[in-house]
Length: 171
Image (cartoon, rainbow, N blue to C red; front, side, top):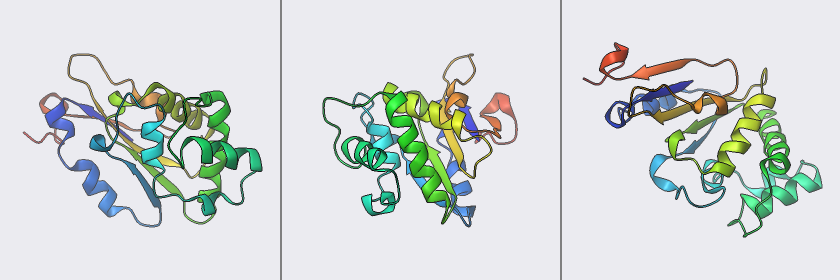
């Protein structure tokens, strides 16, 4: 699910209300105010901050190593590419799905660092038909539409928030 609109429209508490209603899913949240958009993989680190290395114990050794070096600890200067890290993140999400299906909540899609965006786009493409779901929020200040749909796995619902988008408007 992708919500988009102006800053005031996307700051309505709609996402928090939805998350409060979630039952039977592990909620992993990347809040708008907790990440420096210039830090490589900073948003991904924030998103998986409640996952510990023990939960990754069943992953292939190479995936565990990549996750440990890149998102479970502060990333070093040599961050792996999305093509390399993407399969490890997908492997982690599949492992988490075995016990409780994950719901990823990504606020401020427009502020994601490029590396996180690439990894999430890979995950969205490869996670089709899985139990992984996402709620994303993107600020779109002008007349253009959202671009954050690329990080959301299918099935996808896109909802505009604000006066021009109808009943979900805070106004």
